[in-house]
Length: 305
Image 1 (tube, rainbow, N blue to C red):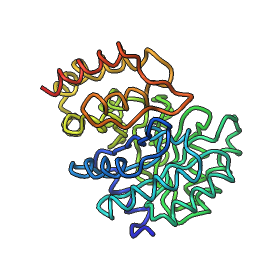
Image 2: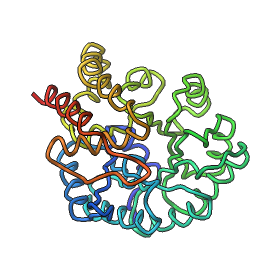
Image 3: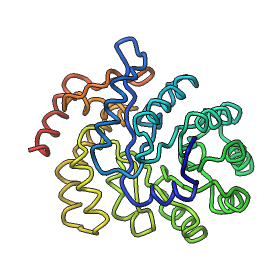
């Protein structure tokens, strides 16, 4: 069981870079706990504010509910209380409630509530879904605003009034006006997390809106680079940030945009390129082609020196 209150979890997450580890699979797409735990341990050798187990980069969407629990338990065991572990949670309301309770039993410190599967819903419906998860657990809940689950500032305010354990707002939309409306309404009531694919691209402008942290998938294979970039963002070192964007992030995004679903596939390819192979992505995602992988290897080698 978590030893951190939801408020403490939110405060810590907002103070540093966040890691979203990939989930390791063998050639038959079975979860490999030992290399996953070793990867978490390697990440913990670096400066981190929190670890998100079975999140989007961890292919939450392709895991069975029992596998989500396996991944979360492995992360909790490996981190051993050093930093908060935030468990992925989602699908329909009934499954999300079950996953929330299982994450609490597993010792997670919080939840990242991803959009419900497939369906679109009204603000009232989304609010009821989020509230059901908040009521099902004592853990701090971070709502992931993206795709078919975009809530506005009115819905968010009502949820925060009724659910003190709703402590975080992760933006995966990129709607600057909505983000500003949310921050203007909620202020320091929430911790704000940048969650757009390749969040480094938006980190500097988002910082000006109160978004002090973001999820770095790049950390999986270039942790030193990712940390240096984050520190440049927090220092508002525009020259260093722009150099990092030009030299690595923007070419990386151009390669990522070659295929649908590559936001995850390119991270696993990056792991392989640095000698930390985490196996293939699960269907319906596809791995990079050999030619694309070679391009990524060249790009990574350029910034590793």
